[in-house]
Length: 381
Image 1 (spheres, rainbow, N blue to C red):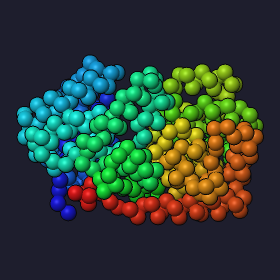
Image 2 (cartoon, rainbow, N blue to C red):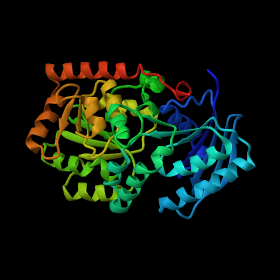
Image 3 (cartoon, rainbow, N blue to C red):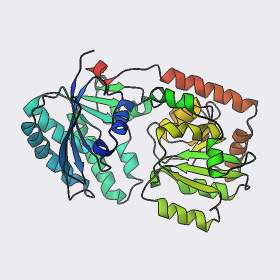
Image 4 (cartoon, rainbow, N blue to C red):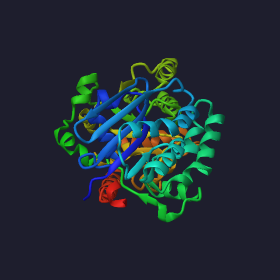
């Protein structure tokens, strides 16, 4: 397979290139970018400015911006800044890779001057996601504008699954330009999975075996709808513990909500968990539950299913695609479903009858099938 020169236009607010380069590579490989083969030039908007190289195949120009909280401005300035960086550090891209619609005009500007194919890796539904964010009116307008105008600048739209393919096709992108790959966080973590040990998480948090752990994983933001989980938990007996893995801006608000419901001893915010530790949490979980308002795929469902944890999710497109019909590979919860019926589903999963064992079997088979799609960025070129 021939190595490719990949220019990545992105944001690196956490400064992963400098502080967690291995994590950055794993994030790229989640989308099958072959970091063990290809050459990468990152142009990243960031909180700091620097130029650095890692080994012979990774170079980054980080440019500090004062417009961090106003996305259209650094989208606009990218058109000149990225070209300037490439002029100073000659790099002829085979691929100009972006994850955000707003960077597509900059990619087009680079393409005119330096060549290369523009690849948009679209892993969410921008218009749907914007509705859950702060200043949703403005964000929705900008997302809709990008979907109508910018998306057609991409030569290839690289995406996750059938719902995303339908979403992109509905925006007028020809089907031959849409490539579906299998976003996989499981195969790369096989060494961690093999070393995972049941009981470690319960011991860490002093959770007795008679308690049932409801596990949820996601950014602590509005689209994940964690408050609904808090409300459901408040109607359940104290055998049930909710453990949430993730970080985000709404942590203080969520903690206040938990306190108001008197659930301080039954809700655990575990923060960001390293990949090597994550699989221990799945082993100790009795139920995996996430009721996102918007979800293009929900890799955490694949992970939970692979580890044999019964799953309950919302009807968000990516979650519904993964679970199938209600009761097929897990259970689905509608926005207006009766809380009593939801709690019955949680009890059924936690107690694990024969029906749940068959659900878990079908779920594991489904994930194994999805992982057979090995289409990478090199393959599509």
